[in-house]
Image (cartoon, rainbow, N blue to C red; front, side, top):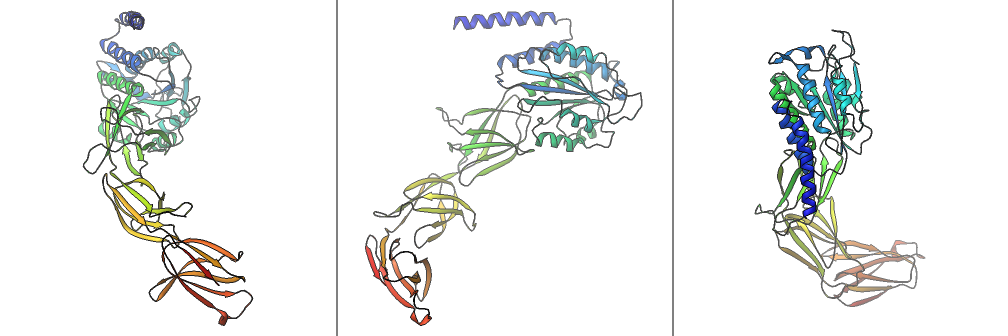
Length: 475
């Protein structure tokens, strides 16, 4: 323990020296650095994170922001500070794509975008140097730039993030919303972050479909927004899912939960729900940049759609999943090799599950229809499952029917129901003796010998089946 403490002390001394060397920077840079560095010490990020800064270098970036400074000078100074901070992360790589900077001033070049600094470990100095070499010139081509950004990430195994910094809307008839949707659906990158410089309220609304939007009308707001965005991209976000019973208590557990990206449909996480030794649902870490559809694999499944999490915080999500039990059994000794029942929602023919007899399973509270695959089949409507209760259903012990036939016959077994008969099963034409496990009741065999090809040679045999008894029928 002492050796660990000494290592942490040595680490803090080293990084405090770095902080002291940054004192010449403005105070908000120091705050940004300390916040980001603290997150870096605490975060456990085994997978690589790649952050692509997509920077607007259209002519309008020369507009004044505040304090007599233009938007471009503020943007490149802020980005330089953030790039310095990110250099402390071992599992983070950065890159820079710029648009609107290669054309003549005022030119409407709708393909003017370039990856100026590709992803590479230790490229932070290159990024800062390139930022100060670029000058704004052309137009705003967000959709095309986002499309080209798809090729900037080396692979899709890392956590890929785009941070768009712009002061204008699309000017090249592209559809940034559609491109962003495609990037997310294809798993290229997570939902982008957008920082709007000197923008109006309508400006922000235009970007709602593209990604998470942050307004930055002043230098101080820009510093805050950039800090928040990068922190959200890196910091741990935790989630506690409360599976609620009918009393709204988080008592349900021991079931898998699947988190899907609501935009792409991609499966992101599977967590087997757990309640810890203190009686609280367990906490898991998730990516806060996505909107999720959470499917809880109860029977039937329950889903909560459009779930968003507050980045860098502990989130609690409640999902209604009240459950009870159903036990199916057969009285006495059964000769069924594997008797099962089909469970369906009430008045819904879709099969939910096959429930084995002499087994107890959990179901969401409600009404169900049960079809027991005995011979003949047994149908039960409106089987009620109550919270934390066991609904028990038993069927009689079957009997055994032996059919002897000296000749091959055409025929079938029917169950007598008042003045009507219902088909149970056809006779096996390939054997002289058949043994059938069948439920108690009154039945009739209707048959005709194969060697007699006239209907008048139809015969009937009525018989009863008792629970646990053998019955022999000779044809």
